[in-house]
Length: 583
Image (tube, rainbow, N blue to C red; front, side, top):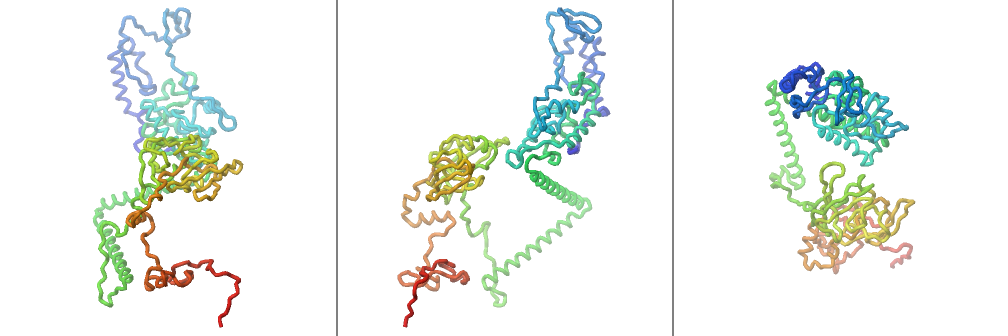
């Protein structure tokens, strides 16, 4: 069936055998008798169960029946004549105005002119099934990527329509997400899953109050003998539980079917994790109930303390070995006193978010998405400024913040457009295939989807040289002058990276250089090996700060001597020359 009933299901509130209904029925009957004229009670009090037809509130209709100019005719209408209405018994009533209120045909209003696989039309499928039919009222077998809001059997009957719509929209979004991400081409429900779900729905609805009268909830000419194609087979809690996530085994995948296998494996792991948490909780409750919880916590605490003591002892031994201290020479070994943080600072501690483009999605591949620059940031150790750009998530109701490399001319409050159909303007992100030859670009993707890898430093840019549509390739010139070929659907930012000219101003003193390089991953300043003493560096001690020997060194050299040109392929010696022997 694919849909499990949640605990505390509310679907029984409108069952025929539910004693709960007897109390509101008594209240409704008492209200009708107290407000409506007595001669109409036999007609106004329903003969069917409460809830069989949609419940309505009395806006003063029953009280208006007491007016002298109002009369009720319970004889069915036979036909409309030129001057009024003739009833089935032959009585004729003359009227100046007739207001039609004969209901509506909901059966044919839910079927659009849609053609599915093998030329099957939606109305033909509904007729073959005896009325509108679908899988959970949202998808239909044979119609891939067809999603219906408030479709067959999604009406809650006597509660909020907005609640049902929101549940279905979230459900459809979960189905659309792998399609928009390019993982699969589409989904459609399996025919056997749809059949099982509808058999379950009709079985539940047959036990409810809706089968006891003619209403628009049911198909057929008179709405009395057809299937119930409108009402959801449960309460609001049941609907929420059913739409909380798709049951992937009930769907057929168009495209890469391996995605469905991976998804089902992930769902299985999630279920195992939930069962594990439940087992832990049940075990804890069992220990509490038998009075062994304190003993268990004490045992766990002792085990933890023993583990910590062992770890401390291992740490003390390693420190002693490193410092060449041992118990034999009776020198006490103590660990270094540490505060709440490490004694070393990572050079990345002041870095902002990684500067990269938006994740490539359906919106960028087929259209564009707009963002707004909220802030211009300085990133320690980076010459180029960054821009924090906020986008509206095209698939969910939330905002997404991305950190871009700022281009020259970008400012707070500026709009940034990303996508295939974005305008050719500074700061926008487009595929390189959409850029004419000679366009200045930066932050270019080397591979599609890597979110930017080329021409990213301050003041740098690349240039589009040419396109090769038949190979889906684009040729660009990098800042170094080298030429590179990238895929035509690789993205790039239009413009020059901001922050150019920073190297034109000299540092003037070592202090500025120290703080500059302190934010980077390199140590500075560094003392040259030739300026050291021979005991401090293998290159030290030479005349006039020269090494005095070849700087090449074997790869197998010991760590203290492994400096210079390690395993160099070229040593500077000319091959093939005549060597003169000294005599």
